[in-house]
Length: 248
Image (cartoon, rainbow, N blue to C red; front, side):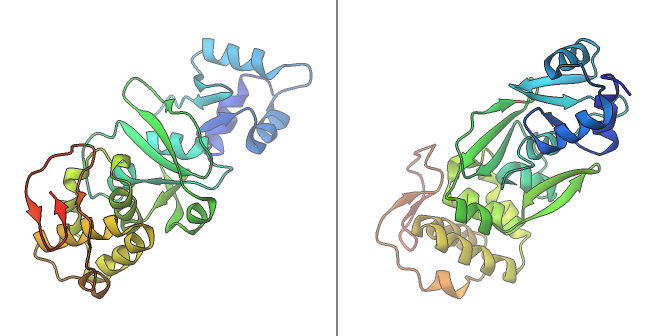
């Protein structure tokens, strides 16, 4: 075995990202590279040979010669050894609820991390919540082309988008997303948003009412006293719901 086998080992084990500080990299290194090599030298050679691509300090994507690795697999792979979940746009796209190009992949963590550019089109955007909320998120392990990912459920992704509207680029599509929800999913989403903020509950009630959907009991009892924006980043004072005190 040699340095050149490192990328092949990663792809064979369906590991999208070589993180020089991770346990998976230490295993890959011990099984492929003979003593005497330094990781920096080996990875520089692999970059020059087009076998890996550097995306950050100590972070490299193994390049599959057959097919391009999905960005969601890279985003989740970067944080594979810490609690996290991919949410909002990328999660909803993974679930088939939106089909827009995802240029920003939102990943929820308990610690602050800088954005990471995957390529010219896509950026990983880490966002933070309290560690207990990260651990309690309704997310699950699955795969994308065989690579392990941790992704928020449909309900969690919508709850995150309503509690933190700036986390979702395509928030205008939430009414369309909610039309695909069952009444049970809407009720679970209501419980999740109300556990976050009253404003998130107001936004969900506004959207469900606009879609002609029955309201979950938790929302039917909500009587907000403060006005909020549906999309705070737009600050558009358009249609105003007196019931929900939401500027749509």
